Image (cartoon, rainbow, N blue to C red; front, side, top):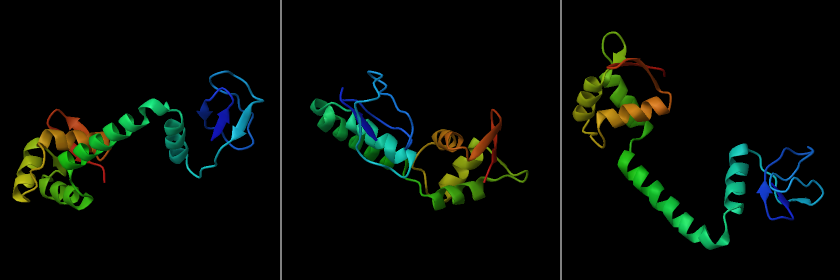
Length: 138
């Protein structure tokens, strides 16, 4: 992570010709910290560029958002595997109805079948075949 004299923090590869994205200067840069992964660098840069006046508010909002997301979803990978294995139809596809039935059988009705399928689609665990059928990609 690099910091410019103008106050901007940003990421760059080691030994690269870096310019500040705010002021476009190259000479006023200092290395703050090195990271082994791009996600760690991204998080550190984001945190370093948040104005001091709103750090506390932003942190509390993020914490409450993460807590509500965890409590709303709350499925473990084992839960997901069980639901999918019970929901598979003879042609190896799944439907909202089969997901709903397997969630009821397993007593895992923490969310609607529609929301569950949205989560699976966004995480690329299933592929939509039609409006009412999906294939499991695991």
